[in-house]
Image 1 (cartoon, each protein chain N blue to C red):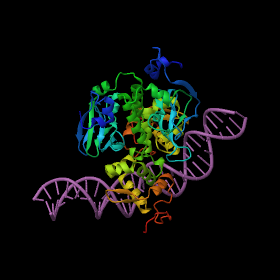
Image 2: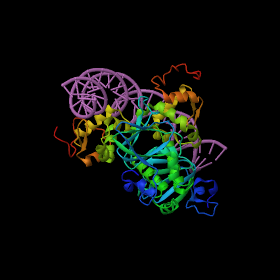
Image 3: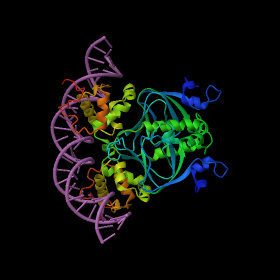
Image 4: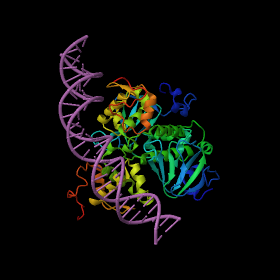
Length: 233
Length: 233
DNA sequence: CGCCCTGTTGACAAAGGTCAACTAGCGTGG
DNA sequence: CCACGCTAGTTGACCTTTGTCAACAGGGCG
């Protein structure tokens, strides 16, 4: 048993003190240390007992180091996405010296009780929603065209079916409708999508992925930089 | 029992079909209808059975209508923050025609099983983290100064203690370190904070709140618009 | 059939990103 | 314990991107 498990919300839920066992074990990290990395198999779940952890998303904007998506203080779980996803969706890094309690996914699984219980179902639904929520809305996530391309890549199918009004999509992506419209125009000019006033159809998924990933400093120019699928003007 | 509760993840968790009871009851909303409003008591939790719901945050940027924070498709809960918060933290609006299943907070509470169970504890911790995560990082949330002021208002105390490196805070707020630095300079010029290279101290909470809330078209000007606590230059 | 709302396009302004130079603070090593 | 060097932060100048305002057009709904 770690220090102070009796005072810990997780320890209490485990019945520590009542002879029960908590699957979480203390571990420390120094400031700056990595806890887990986005994309690697989500083997562990951690509970932050003290200190500050930042969650970064490498796949976002700057390929150099990823950017900060959220900050987690003491009393929160990190890596919980492992319950609904095979891999971590962000990179966790200790920002101060931290004390963590870690459990394996298997241990966590057992600790949570039977699959399909109401509380567990609600937890999993919430986690899935959180995983799906990862929208790029900041200017540091890349320019408007890039964010729109990224959004079309992973939400396009669902959202096209759902016919979300364009005004709301723009808002979701943190830009004005006019800017969204211009971004779509650019994507359509290079041949990644075909748009009408009310629909967006993806015609070149690969191109879209490429545009979501790279800089596009020369994106919407009238000289469609010889990209593979650039249509005749 | 609603239609198709046997096929529903929530119905299954409730044991529908095994003689058990599901606290959720079907309700429909037409496209554009409000489901609940940010700030009002969180009386109900909803499960989206079909259609699309957008979650808006009025307290963000444009006071006109609030902006879209997330989209929820079928198979997710909305309003779950009621379990850990007295009021809704966003406004939910049907974007298409939707079928919802609603339960009262009390019903949800009973359905989730005893307080303090592992799964329920994990759920609540997750929900609390989500509530706390509501960072303004988009340009549509207001200009840099406004976002920094807003962040200082609700995270300042915790984060100042935790000494989060300034570079990471900038990143979290969706801006460059240079821009963050300039925003702090502006806030310090009008007398809301006192900064050193490594610390930020709030000296006028009210002013900070005001700056977080309003437009600041004339914010960083050298004429410190006669605000109450503007320091001698 | 016509009105209204949403989306599109253009021109302009302003906010913020970028690059560069500089400085304070911190840790390291002598 | 002090000096040095390194990194994070600051400030300035410039330029790109995007927000803003306005005019217009297509579609949907009454």
